[in-house]
Length: 165
Ligand SMILES: *[C@@H]1O[C@H](CO)[C@@H](O)[C@H](O)[C@H]1NC(C)=O
Ligand SMILES: *[C@@H]1O[C@H](CO)[C@@H](O)[C@H](O)[C@H]1NC(C)=O
Ligand SMILES: *[C@@H]1O[C@H](CO)[C@@H](O)[C@H](O)[C@H]1NC(C)=O
Image (cartoon, rainbow, N blue to C red; front, side):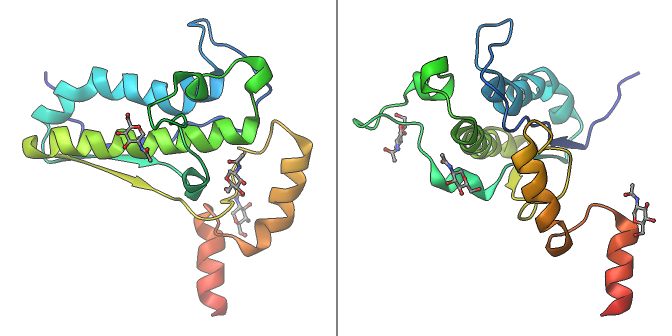
């Protein structure tokens, strides 16, 4: 039996991790947030194409705007994608991985949309409350303080807001 796949949401992410390498020898944020999705989509590409119309949604972030993965001469700088421990800054690694998400989504769309598979990258909402802050108590505090002012993924909460307004 041929199974169909019409919607693929690429939403896995690590944030504020201390520096570490995966067993492939790559910085973990980069591998989890970008390469993992990249690889999954490669593996599922044929399934997506034979399921057309199909769509891929890559969850990125506004954070991508604050960063660059090119060196000063404008060439892709691999050491920025998977930095050594001394060059690592968790927030920067996250922002760069979110830029990778967008570049990947755009290129995927360019390649697969003629075959009926579209790809879009989205920003889910500012400081959308999830467990993404769990690696550092400072972020946990920050996200908790911001929580009443941000969107909720909890559908009951949203209904309550709609009732009040
Ligand atoms: C990462 O993005 C955030 C916005 O989400 C921005 O406030 C921060 O300055 C950026 N940090 C770096 C190091 O790029
Ligand atoms: C960054 O590098 C890529 C690959 O070489 C290139 O296509 C792109 O135009 C560069 N972007 C900037 C802002 O220099
Ligand atoms: C979702 O919101 C409702 C109402 O505010 C609350 O009772 C419920 O515990 C929440 N569920 C989760 C998983 O947070």
